[in-house]
Length: 333
Ligand code: NDP
Image (cartoon, rainbow, N blue to C red; front, top):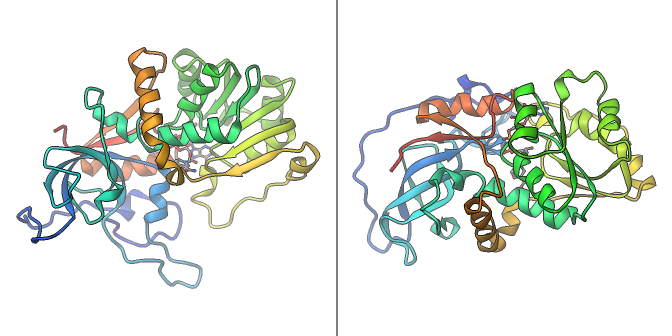
């Protein structure tokens, strides 16, 4: 649960694990809700959006409550016509052992339980869809184009890089440690990569990696990186604005100074929210399952054990402590 209102960067002490009384799992007659047993919870930057904050005037945005986010679960009691006990699903759940889902229409049934179920927190779940929609639909990649991905070793970034290679593009990623840079090159097949924390000058680093400029930027971080990228975009380039994680814990957003490049270079910068696109989920799921089974796509997870590890895992995202998709195991079956 969230223990106190956020007023600065998220901290482990903002959350705590509480034991509640044992309750009998059951639904009132006529209920269309379901009760699920949670197996894996997905630790995503956007979990912050659901945390209650104090605004500048000192008033609070919402009551403190159970932390929520995406996860993989097993239905234990169902009042819903399309779900029965034993079904495996993914969707929005609480960070708890069991969740009552009052609107199960938002749960998605897992069609491929033969694959690791944890994949439905990442490559086969929300972050995977994010990479797919953002890259294929917003970036409209063409063979031979130059693609740059920030936060490239994370849940979304590692897939964007591999999609770009499949589309015949030249792809470079940035990440915050040498270990992650190695992963990009050795495991995910990026053509080049750099550790942005070691670069004095991001503009110079991008010029070194892209002497001819960038056609496509998959934006995950914002701030100084976005500013440097704008200087290096080519005429007619596209920027998929997926996330700006460098800004999420700031009270005042950093200024971006090079926006004029959008005009002079005729760029298209477009934001998107993955949940608008779930109608395409089944097509996406089948494509990724095919790629996984043929081993055309690699995937790295960072797995923490037990609900009590979730607060540190969330805070760790903003410090770059995760290597690959961060998730937490609540129960294995
Ligand atoms: P990741 O698995 O990439 O984890 C977050 C990573 O961000 C960290 O490991 C760290 O990597 C990097 N990071 C943290 N703080 C900073 C900082 N101050 N500056 C630069 N990099 C930082 O997360 P996801 O793949 O789940 O998410 C990636 C982005 O996609 C986020 O911005 C997220 O909000 C966005 N997103 C958007 C969605 C949408 O619908 N539009 C849906 C899902 C995600 P490093 O060590 O490399 O710095």
